[in-house]
Length: 354
Length: 147
Image 1: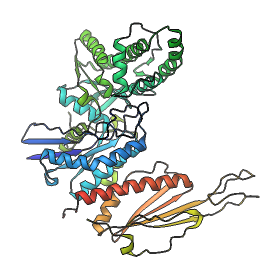
Image 2: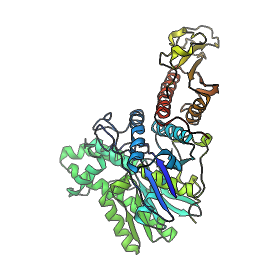
Image 3: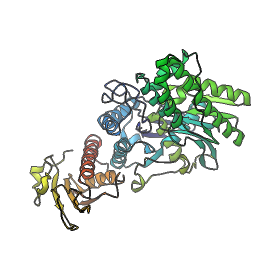
Image 4: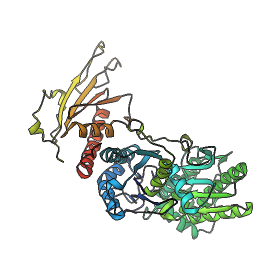
């Protein structure tokens, strides 16, 4: 039995993290075998926006949407060709319902709806955050981890309980990736390949820990205060030679990552959890993984993390979550298929888990 | 699959071009633009055709702008598919710009009502981009399979 999903992803939640600066979008086709019969989830992933974005700017929704509209049909055809499948082999169409930026989400959703109708296949609107979680679980084999989801657009600590991915803690203002990316702009750090990656490399050369505001509030975190502080302080401190840009990168990482480790640990203690999973683009950061590993070891817990192929937004994760939903009998009627910029992780009934 | 040319269809109805709104020249699209102005009278009004909201008394006038678009498709099935693909997403400024999609025969009709001409214009432009994408999708991956 062939069960197939075709999914697209928008870069909607990646508001401030441009990945590549090349003219073409790369497509990644991913398949795996599982369980009964042969199952071929197929994902189209759009890595990186097109030529429209500047080297020191963030994503603009209109430009991102334009990019998606320009590449999506080729990508779809390429996915089918590479997988050696026709539209008749497809069982359902999974797409990102939200959260994220409006225009890019719509660009992908209209194509999903159109092909679903053309081919007479069911439609599945997937929550982007749940896409990350399901892909993380699949790739790492973690059974029921406490999840730290950190990206340019999201910062949440999530644990599964009674058919919901419950949000135990989150940012009360901006995402940690957003904070890092905007800090990179203050120091004019290049976006190639990504601001976060460049901050990570510079941080390795930092020697001095500059004291920054540490803002954990109960189970939650806040980053806009740290960002304002460092935006003000950076120019002054660099001018007086009090520290180097590398010191600032190092200090910012140590501070924000420690905050994330704290709220993750708090959730793990609350749930009695022995597994932690990091997903989302900021999860690529090896220093964050290292700090989380230290905390896990101290608790006798196990850390799961993925590499940049799966941390960063990708189409396959939408396919994976869509696959789980499809198997559990979820369907998204066309009239309910509208995208939504705000879509809480705990709004979805997770019927595919016990 | 080809979308019918504007010429082949025969333009129906007058495209009233008051206030500088121009009908679209894109193939396969017939557009009628009109600006209705149910005015809220104030003691003195100094306002241009764009619906200038400022007046010497501070009472803004309310104009409702209407824009209508008719898009022919080769058949009713395609028109319904396009409608179902384009209708579900809500307008970003839903309290100010409203649009309605209906299908009659093989024609998809979209009607906008908006108080703000700038937001109306943005909505129309965005819609046309998405419409174009839907049409390209149908051209590449159609025709619809039989039910």
